[in-house]
Image (tube, rainbow over all chains, first blue to last red; front, side, top):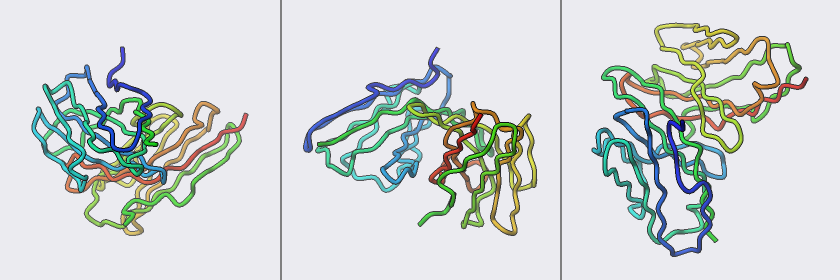
Length: 115
Length: 113
């Protein structure tokens, strides 16, 4: 059973297109995240949702819009794709324990290539 | 602005020997540190963590050491095994309950049989 799954695994698209990446977790966690790993290999947080509510929004262009239909799903929609959006996008989830840093469980990643 | 630095992009060790991976941080507000391991084409998986109230945490072959005054932590793997070959990410969090993790660039460990 895959704990955190992402689709698609690979995504190749043209500049200017709109695309979505889906994420689902079956761990019963309250919090979900999107991370971006760019060509320099840095893994940086983009968004975090707790129980469908946005709690972390790092300085990400508003072309990126996360959507959480329920606490088990967090999708990432990207409008007007640019070359610089090419990266590996990781979804993650964790419990939400006040006053503690909960272990985050990552999905396998989606490699986005913008041509 | 790299708040978490892993200055060695790669490390190669012989099977059975000790692997030492290093991590430095600049933000004195960080109070919780984690190591993640990543195989190719997979997401990072949690390995071990340490709170700033401790200076050592051990889990089987893996030990993490924290030197708060030097803002430095290290991961020791002993004995190293070929299956340990992966990229290791150091991550840090501030203020205990924050979900925001700041990651380093990773160190690629190769354990040679």
